[in-house]
Length: 165
Image (tube, rainbow, N blue to C red; front, side, top):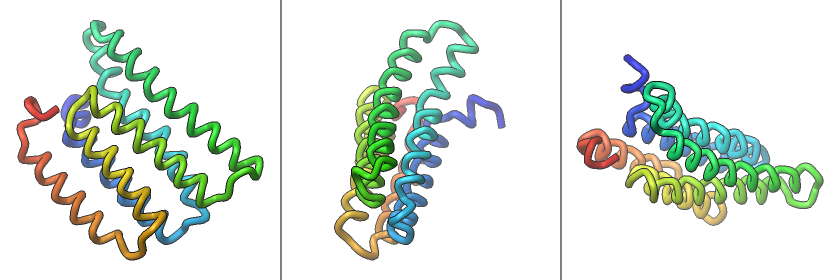
């Protein structure tokens, strides 16, 4: 499998949804440590979002503006998450709240990135927002989220990625 195929919009979408489901499980089962997971996901989602533009820039050298724009966008989300983590480390907010706030920042950053990149990013942002609401207010939501994620992955797989990306 080459890098281009590995960095396809469908593969990255699938990876994001699976990581989101894992986070939903961690948020349900280990609320006191979910802030660490979502903070790490902020960095990983940033890398996932930037990787295709970086790879294209390295291959062709003609995508600097798009790469810079995306890098600045995700750096803003990272900055906000770092501030929340600093509040948590200083004792100003508790574990559960820190996790929900960082998750909400991740959802918003992903959604806004999706406005520029396509429906998969928008869906992932909305999915992360739904996880935020589920973790905060509901019990027993993992299976419903898994069904929704599987349906979205199936649609993404069957959708023409040139049109839908």
